[in-house]
Amino acid sequence: MQRWRNGVVTINSTDNGIRTAASRHADPAQAAAELASQLHHPNAGFLLFFCSAEYPLEALATALGAAFGELPISGCTTAGELTPQGYERGSIVAICLDQRFFAVETALIDDLEGFDLAVAQSLVDTLLDHCRQQAVAPVNEHSFALTLLDGLSSREEQVLATLDAALGRIPSFGGSAGDDNHLSHTHVYANGRFHTQAAVVVMINTQLPFEVFSTHHLRPLAHKLVVTAVDHEQRRVHELNGLPAAQLYAELVGRPVAALDPVVFAQHPLAVRLGGQHYIRSIQRVNDDDSLSFYCAVENGIVLTAMQPAPLLENLATMLARVEARLGAPVAILGCDCFLRRMALESLGQLAQASMLLRHANVVGFNTYGEQHHGMHVNQTFTGVAFGALPAS
Image 1 (cartoon, helix red, strand yellow):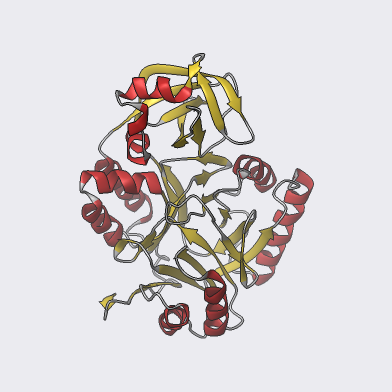
Image 2 (cartoon, rainbow, N blue to C red):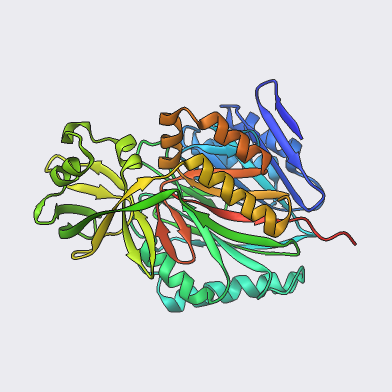
């Protein structure tokens, strides 16, 4: 492993077909060239990247194409990056997969509204057929899907549920693209350029043992809130328990409405209980009419449970230890970490400790505007896939 060298690049290279690197260079051409110098090799088969939305995206797309040539590339913008050295901002991080160990096929969904089951099944069948032709490993037992969605599209639930039905037993996870907490423009990358109101599906077939996982550090309280007036399309709750939503929520958390901000939302989230589990429905912002906008879909009549945080670092360490117990020391973990978790760590002064845990576990990835796990759109989780080493021959 190399650490930041001259303040710009770090790399982790393994003998199991995975290389990771990151660059802090603000100049797109320089950043792309440095990534290519560390990652591109004769057996490179696919590049996945996550970048700050502060980059000039059109120039970055051109630079990546020039640096990596015909190598297939997918990615998205972030609300922060997880590099081989831990949490970063204003950077670009990438993972390169070796074609001897991985078969990778991608598809762009540029019509989220029209993405129905017939379209999804055709997409999945095509991706799996292409992976099967490369004969890296049996596709049904050794494949998973990664999904990257425009984090401001408000179409995650529809797309994910439809895709999950088509995937069947194939596990899936992913993250919603961010834009450095501006909540303005989020992008996914496919076919040589950045897209909005779109999604990318990456089918990965591999010889390596792997595990798709998801964890959160939140515990339920006794307080229940019923959504009694909602604009479903806008994910905007006007009333809870028949009262203005922001006012009731502020009373619940013991703050004035004017003091409600993302840090408060991260500390006092709400959740919906489904199938015996709680799935977080994080609040995005307070609106002028005292309504609350959410990152996930909310329906009229659903019951929201107030949640409280348990120690986040303890939860993260426990999850990483469980992964290691099942797979051995991971050669890499690709993680989608909610940006609200990062905010919580920053407010507690624990970001450096969390970075150390991620660094030791070989984690790379990004901070999201929402996570995806087996067809569910959730918030305030750490979700991803861990790769184990190939057994010694």
